Length: 195
Image 1: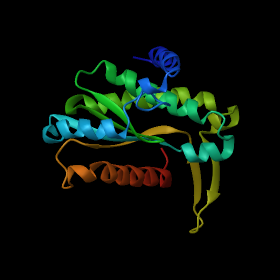
Image 2: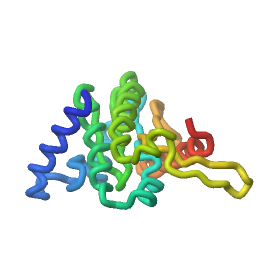
Image 3: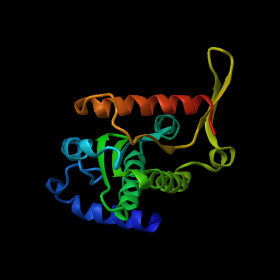
């Protein structure tokens, strides 16, 4: 699994996009929210054997503010392609689209963390090509002082995920919004203390 496989996935996706009815999500080629909900029906009782990760493209909004929307679709496709090709080698895994910059990944619990780590590493590598040399070298796109007077640096794009490997104390119907909220909180925390 690597960037070559992800690129091949995007090339195949572009061929199939000629007929949008072949794909649930036209932009990514991944199953859409309805398909994700159907998959959750079968996996929810097996949480423990399987883990579920809500994955989002972190720091994409600051990127769009600075660089514009010209490559927005391309960024989303790369994130989807990297997640999809990473899952391809893991039996029982699944990835679908649940929002513009959001994905749900399901995989055997033992493999989930390494799958997410490898996907994030590849996405960060690819995302570097979307920045100018100055931003790449300093590792952030802009900085500002917050209300408390602390200096905040807005970092580069990455994949942020929130993972569950045990049954949560939330109904299946509310699982995606629950995971999304926790993932966004994690992203906000990481923004306060960038790595």
